[in-house]
Image (tube, rainbow, N blue to C red; front, side, top):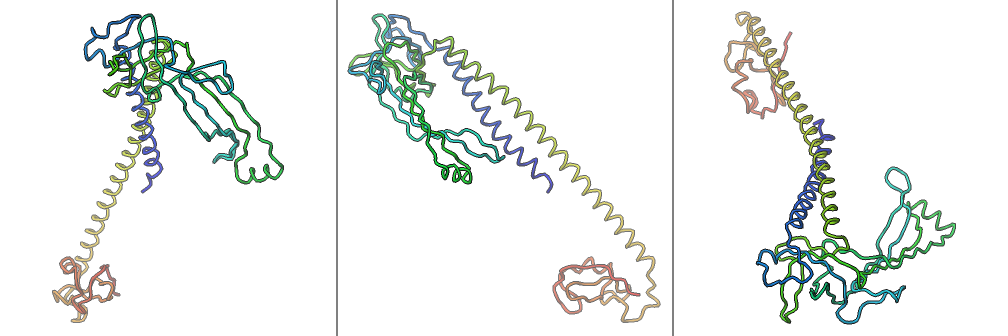
Length: 337
């Protein structure tokens, strides 16, 4: 089969098409949900909301820790409620084409958090499970890059291994106290009577972002548009590859049918010519077919090698040689001069 290249390309294209279409549907779904979500004002009355409206609400307020906030490790004057510490290794790696390119590997990533709430006016909403958010915006409060001091031997070994270390990057990010945050999720009343916002039980996306709602909608729209065009692109490539493969298979099938028909015509012509050339009256007993005793011996039986039957009789003999009873693996025309 000569279509392996196209089939592999079609398989890869199908995977990419599936990923792009999945993200397109995801962002389209999220965009529609955020557009239809119930927006809570400064002092909303939660009890007036229906069950469906409570399932997905938008609230914007100032971040305030419940209890003692987290102090920045390198900037103790900055406090927050969610802290992410990341250590990354930077290196230069040789790719498959032989070129060197930057590479980042996360060595360690840890989170620290304290309970917090969003406050606006007299309204206070406690935020639950912030790490479960689809979008969690944190501010970078510290970033440091330490260059690696490599010896000559390290450079030589790195050249042959295809990886050269550049250095270590340490990053500290915080969800700072006092920052204005837009939270989108399910609102409810806790056992202690406090209003809380948590990941939606319906599986809707959960957002804790520093963007206003309009910016979030614009970002989701841009992502939706990007993946829509990627879906169209890879869908079109897949259709083109499918057409090419189908056309090639059809042409191969047509060529095979023409070859089979030509073979049948040649076989019929050869058979007719052999029939016309028969002169059974002048044949000796040893030259006659051992089955019909009329036509000349025209077929050799393999593997035993006996030339013992005519072409007419060979059509009904498919298992054993009529002379030695050996299994028949193949038959071919024999020309005796």
